[in-house]
Image (cartoon, rainbow, N blue to C red; front, top):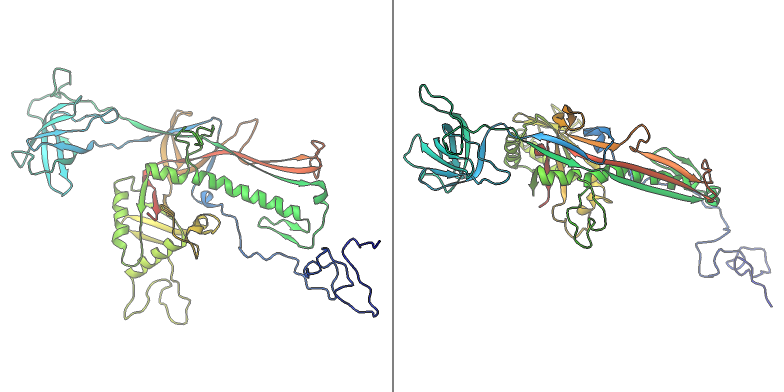
Length: 483
């Protein structure tokens, strides 16, 4: 009986020469020509990997615009101020000097008799009136226009706001009572309360003891500087880098579980957390289908007009994907196209011998300063950049093109401290106490390497964090979406 060699068949030859039939292979398949154990010539081997995707990490966005602060509770609660002045929208005008405010559990009528108001409809028609009677419970106002006999010149739906008051000589400010609807309603300040809950983020990498002792011919090279010929070092390093990206991505993309219907995350016991995109969608400004290309400055000005109605924060950051960033460059370039077809933006006194700068890193429009930068997370093909990848069928609905974030800090009331404090508009809260800091934990278990905690013939690298994002003053944020 013939004995087959371990690595395949070897056929003797009458002459000393290299043939396909007289060297060992790793496979029994004679047709295989790619897994040879020995070759006639030693191949030229590049030991280092080619970094064809450059730096693959995506985190860093929150470090640029926010801060990280510890907390010791399962929930963070903050309060935000409401507007100072009194105004109402969707007020019903009957055309005969009666305006009805749509009162509800959250909308109260606090306009008193004697107040002077401006009533404006959607077409721009307006009337200035004095309130002669007010019923807080029903929201009904009886008004007397200054320049007309009735309110018939206004549409059926108007916006009203108080700009002052007028009383007669020798009068006093009347008190309101159930029997006196012409009294004065005291306006109590109200605040809006928001909250968010941290989520626990975990990851693990496991390598057996045998694999830690195996040397490869490919040299390890990673973003965090890990080097050597032990392949598990690369896997452990990439697990760590991936987890660090998840720390940021989870609070940017986070979504609260808003339903307990069967099959939902809420029904399975998960609570979620409100991320940046969800917060701006719910409480901020969403600019759908924005195209900032050449000649579209008027579209951008409409965003500025909306910012005027909010906090009017002077300095803002624009974090954009590549497509939208180039559109902003085109928009700004169209403003200063130069004379005789020349280019007058970028480096000053441009000439054909100079490097031409066709991009803009910042600009000022109106009373606002904007600093523009590319957000790698929106460009990376493995994350949101895949939506505009070459060959993609179509961009998904509501794909994110960028976000406008106000710079600076906001003043809020801290429930735990019991005082007003200043916080960055965007900041991360992580769980921490004297006993345990859960900002970014990592530890080893097993019996391999530095770990001697069990009889497991492996090394387990564990990662954990517990955190959430606070988006304060979301009404000053703008989210750019495709649709």
